[in-house]
Image 1: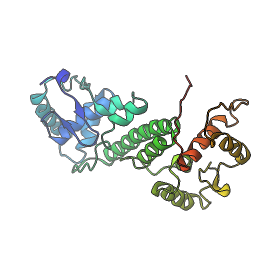
Image 2 (image 1 turned 45 degrees about the horizontal axis):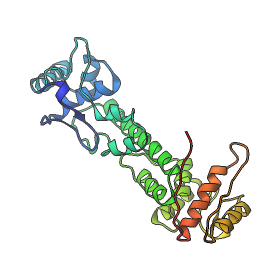
Image 3 (image 1 turned 135 degrees about the vertical axis):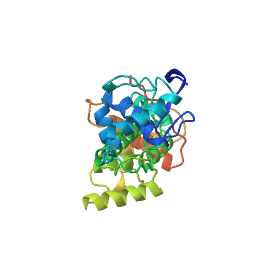
Length: 271
C-alpha cells in the first residue's frame, strides 16, 4: 500500500485501510494535523511511561511502514503525505463540511499509557473540528427557508463531539428552531440554566403570540403578514440602511407564515 492509495480516517473512528494498530495510526494523525513533528515529541505523547519511549516509537513506526512504507518519512522530524479526513474538513464550507463530518474526531478513544498532553490534544482537536462544522451548519440554517433551517439547527445542536454551546450560539439556534418543537424547549431550558434569564432575552423568537414574536418589529411584521395572507400576487419591498434588521424581518415573516401553514420559500440573492 502507498500513501497515494490510502486515506486516514479519524472522524467517527480510526482506520487506515485494513490497518488497525492504534498507536501506530496515531502517529500520522498527529503529524497530519500538527505538521512535521519530532520523534522525541511523538514518543513523549504516546509512550510517556515506557522505559525507552523512542524504542517503542520505532516498533510502532516499523509496523506502520510494513503496511504503508511512505506513511511517514524523515529523520529527526517526521512528515506524512497521507490524506486525512480531519485536516481536509477544515478546508470545507457549508453543506460540504456537514456531509464530510461522519462523526466526532477519535471518538471513544481508549489508549492505555498515553500522556495527559495527548489526551488534551485529542480533545482540543475534537472540539475545534466540531465547532467548525457547527458554525458552517448554523450559517446554512440562517440562509435557508424556515423548515430547512429548523432541520439544520437540530443538526448543529446535536453535533457529535461539539462542546456545550455558548449562550450566543444557543440564541442563534433558538431563533431558527421550529415553534413548539422539542429543540425549542431544550434550547430555552439550557439558556435559562446558563444565564439565569428568560430564553427570550436577546433572542428574536418566532411564535405567533405577540409576547414572543420578533422583539421591536411587531408593527412591521403585522404589516407584512397582512400583505402576505390574502390570496393573489404582489410585491413588498423592505428598505433601510444596512444592519437595521431587514433580513431578520424577512426571515421572521417566513417563519410566521410557516407556522400558519402557508407554503413559503427563501431565495437568497446575496453574493
